[in-house]
Length: 123
Image 1 (cartoon, one colour):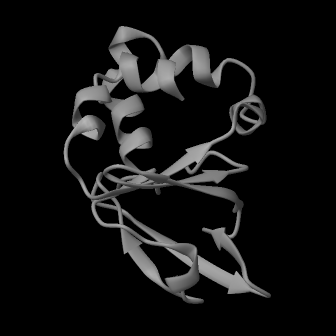
Image 2 (cartoon, helix red, strand yellow):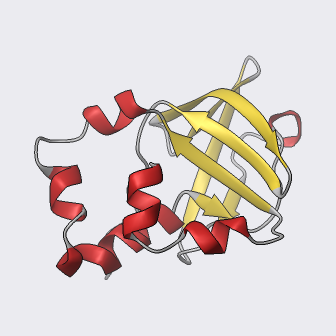
């Protein structure tokens, strides 16, 4: 994730005061993507696509798991929305990514997730 943020030139943006909620996929989550996906997105001519995907993992507000509600829709930094489902205290994003840990940060919160979120296709 850090390498992707550097390639997308988003490190400085996420270092600002925030507040931010970052849904950060694990390394294993990136490994689940089809072969070549990550390498392809790291190319200079794919920077806009990479930025779109990474911004789909960031909300400009702090959303703590204890305040998340089933069916809640959260606007992401790229302009698209994610939908939460909450069952038995476990939070899932877009029906595919589970929050596996939450880490407070000085400018918000990081939720570690077990899948990469892919923004909906543009119409």
